[in-house]
Image (cartoon, rainbow, N blue to C red; front, side):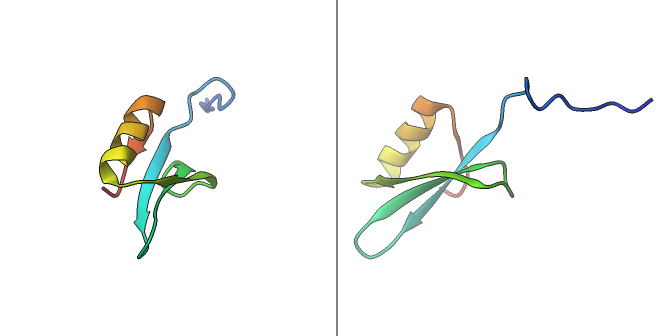
Length: 63
């Protein structure tokens, strides 16, 4: 007997990656470690990025 995942009812794990350029900071949100990019948000810094992740239930990955 094979067990199948019901992807329609299971919550999707979202992961956030923090990226910094010389003048800006970005938070890239993906569906899982190798998943597609869902959103990119411009953030003031790491403290705000952590707060954004905590508020939206996103796992902070690279910071």
